[in-house]
Length: 508
Image (cartoon, rainbow, N blue to C red; front, side, top):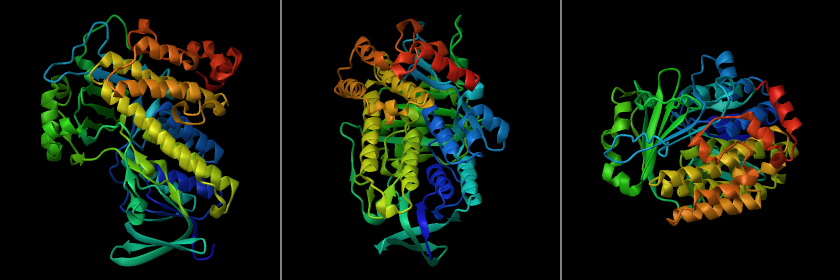
């Protein structure tokens, strides 16, 4: 298009840069605008099996071979050791009570370990966003994306099927033209501000706040745990490590460059007690409140300022309009718990890419389904996290409730890997009425303070349980046993030979 671009993307985090790369592979001219500069600190760092599979699919479908190695820890380390990474073998949870050291219950009723991979080579990752986002921007530029940083977009107008973006760059007025604009700037982002889009809330979701930073010198929590004759399914700190407690939770993510990302998210009543607006002071009060966490961080030093988010959850009332759309990361933010932001954003990239592939004319894109699914998937993630917040005080109830997530996530990953994506076309099996009904029922019960018995949850999950979950004999330690998937092949509309063949091709 003369004098303009097919697509303007606001925000060069991973979602915006990935979408720019895909659009270039589809032959579109792309303008990528960034308010700041790279490298820069960013939060949202821990992937999941589904997120990495979606990244892998983007690399394969749109001929992005340099992207493919970042889908697993082993190939990332081999091909791009200069980009820092963290090893994520699974999801680790420990329950704490204020003023008491971690209990280390001998029956493991105060801990939960869920492996996400059978060994390190094919494991998930923590993204050191400062480096990884900068890498992706460079890749987008190499593919022909026009990248401009230090731009503040203040207004837009649309006429004749073209949007004009106006703003300022280093004290000078600038303007750009594009046929379609996508906002990848995150919650309460550029288009929300410029267009005055309405903000709404998720029903039943608690008001939460967060404080976080990056640290050196953080200890490994596993060093505080008593010895056991039984080995855990993976080293507990080589994971997304969670400390949960009544009113909130804490994340600890380790990178191999010596940096640890850590922070906590709490409901407003606890935020007020800890005085989160005090940032570093709130951090010290938090460590004093939970002695075992304090011991883990006794030698840690912050290498970034302490950040405070006074309003963590966000929901935009509109997802698209004439000539524009929001990525899921700009349409809603719930909470870092379960790392739902990555797969939701990547699913959005896939869906917008499919629209681009189907029609070169953005005016012909039918965004109604994109709107519906984006809103519904955000509601699904919010219902999940809200139920967990309500259950944090009762760890066995939380552990049972978490199986809703782990069952759906493991099922979705294997369905897509076996070429049966129709079985899991929405996040957390939102397209499967029996699962969705059970999901909503059990989470509503938790939010109302009447948590479902674990046996009732497990019975509802049985038709979708292909990963050996919900087994009381495992006492909250779930490793990866590929034979569980083989035995559950029929649940995936497959036979055992199909599953074995897939594992052989993967070298698992």
